[in-house]
Structures are given as structure tokens and as C-alpha cells.
Amino acid sequence: MSTLSQGISDSLTITKRNLIKVRRVPDLIVFATLSPIMFVLLFVYVFGSAIPINGISYAEFLLPGIFAQTVIFGATVTGASLAEDLQKGLIDRFRSLPMARSAVLVGRTVADIGLNVISVVVMSLTGLLVGWRIRSSFLDALLGFAMLLLFSYAISWVMAIIGLLVRTPEVFNNATFIVIFPATFIANTFVPTNNFPAVLRVIADWNPVSAIVQVARQQFGNTAPMLQSSTAWSLQHPVTYSMMWVVLILVIFVPLSVRGYLRSGLR
Picture 1 (tube, one colour):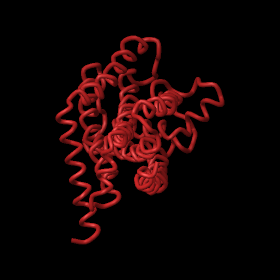
Picture 2 (tube, rainbow, N blue to C red; picture 1 turned 90 degrees about the vertical axis):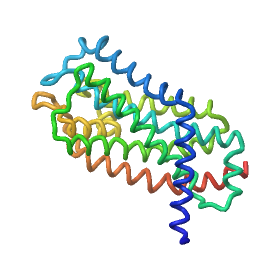
Picture 3 (tube, rainbow, N blue to C red; picture 1 turned 60 degrees about the horizontal axis):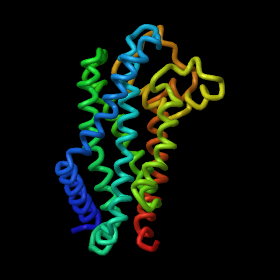
């Protein structure tokens, strides 16, 4: 068996192991989907009436942002699980086995795509109940969901290196919360950025989270001519800008994570 075939086989084995673990711990899926459902209900029914959006309903403006926030938070499962496996000594056992060096990380990140798919399905059904509608074609919508999952996959590798560097899942949760929470709020996720203070508006316009939200809005047809959009290049070309971030993150963090995995046993 070639090295590539061995690596794919090992990665699939780890992916299967992680998916079985999710099936046996359904609480993980329940709480991964309850949070975004709560955000949808809270923003639509509590804040929605106070946030006027020109041309479309607030539910149609909001849901692409909630999708992006959900898959980004879903990517944190990668780091939390690796921190837990490291704490329990499972990573040391994997490292002692004759398997590809990247298999544990690839298997973990691929399995978390499955978890994000479940979250997106639940969110879509919730969105339909509160008035969200897809105004584009089936293929455009499918591409929108694919872009969201691709972006979350790249973020999973950022979470992987953090999970390998911290000593406990609790530290990981605190460390990622203070980064991801402002990243998803200083963006066009929940409100247009037009009324932000000047400095925050620039940060929000060039925030990659804003770009992936803009991609989702365009692909789902949740836009309108009256809905003012920033003139920043990042939001005028959101697909290109998002793909640039995906490639950049993968190029930097995949080798960093593999190196962190190999060195984690030396601590």
C-alpha cells in the first residue's frame, strides 16, 4: 500500500471513530444546535423589530449570519476534542501506532464537517419556521452551504493547533471564546455595518467572517437592491476574498498543527 493510500485509510479510520463517538454522545449534537436556535429566536423575535433592513425581512438578513456563526463555533469541537484526547493520553497512544502522522488531525477535522452538516440542517429548518426563505436556485444555495462548510473546515485547523497547545479543554474553551465571539459580532453577521463607528466599520468590512456571510447572502438570494452594501473590495468580491482566507489558513495551519501534534508528547 502506498504512503498516500495508507494515509487516507488511517484518516478514514479516525474519522469513523470520531463519528461513532458523536453517535454515542448525542448530547454533543443537542447542545451544538440549541445555541444557534436560541440565537435565531432571540434576534428575530426580540431584536428583529428594532433592526430595520431595507428590501428584505430581518429573518432573511439574519439567517446567513447565523449559519456562519454556527459553523465557526462548530469548528471549535476540533480543538476541544484534541485537548481532551491529549489530557486523557489518547494522543500518546495514537502516536505509538504505525499510522500516518496527519491521520488523527485529518480524521478529526473531517468528522467535524459531519457535525456541522447536522447543525446546518437543523438551522435551515428553524430558519424556515421563522420566515427565512431561499430566493436563489438550488445549485446556488448548495454552493452557499458548501462555502460555509469549507470555511469552517479551514477554521478547524486553527482550532486544532490551539487544542494541541493548551493543557485542558476548559482552557481551550475560554481561549477561543474571547477570540471567536468578537470576530462574529464585529461583522455584518447580525446588522449592517453602515452605522458602525468608522474604525469598527473598516475592521468589520475586512473581517473574513463578513465575507463568508456575504457569500451566503448572495448564494441564498437574501439580498435586495435597497440593501446598502459596503464598497470595500472584500465585500464586493466575497467569494474570492473568502477563498483567499481558506487557502491562507490551510497553508499556514495544516503543517503547524501536524508539527504541534508530533511535539505534543514532548511536554
